[in-house]
Length: 334
Image (cartoon, rainbow, N blue to C red; front, side):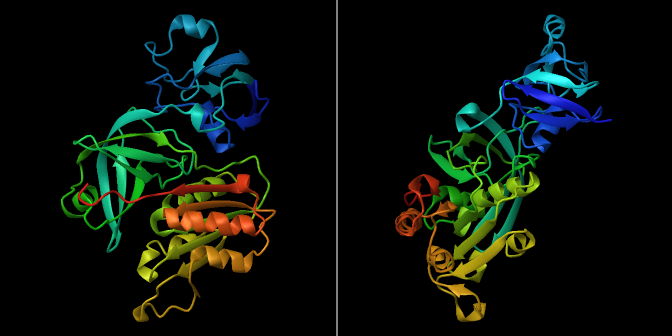
């Protein structure tokens, strides 16, 4: 049986059943409520039931006291509906609504997808989950006090692991460790989520994604999030790399219901490349000479971002509709 769930003060509505937690149903409907662990251990999802009946599920007394229950409080990651409900809770609208946390993680899987690109899958402690907006990044905290930032490549709804795409940097100490000596089960620490590069879901404009190299990672997160929530806007993805190997997950974007255009700037003879060539943002301009009615999300090197911003604005893109994440390489030996 489906129950109607109303959120206050936003006025949003969604449906749930007697077996799905209120948090899971809200996330599936595209409404982001605060959460931390998803299993009742942290209390981050605590809110108030203003009307209706619930089953508290596995909520633990040390997190949700009897007094709180009597006052109508509930852990939405544990509670399920037994009637139509009105819930009082804060919804996550932008990055400032999500607390930045320092968390340990274990290297679960090291997957080499290209000669110079590794995908790391990171496992958080049993009672932890990382809440983030698609497109944000984390910073690894190194033993010497330095930090290394990498975009989160998985979508928020698929949070069993946190995945990052790491390109080897010549002379980079951290990436050398990842490629040469890192082992599965190694323990790392990171800070996050960070950044203001995330999907603005209130817009109805077509979206043009522009990725350079491993700038594909946060855009992957955004697209998978949008598809999971039934985004109706037109979406176009332009992924640029020097050669065919730089498109290190070649089958994935082709499987999405988006208009996908791979672009190589320096194709090798062995690539036998028949597709688009040149700078990736030039391919966008060739297809969209007038960008007045679009939104652009771009991630890549600072040079790519600066050139794309200037040329797209000249093509009519409103400056407030250009969202970007530029990643810089760490100094040699660091």
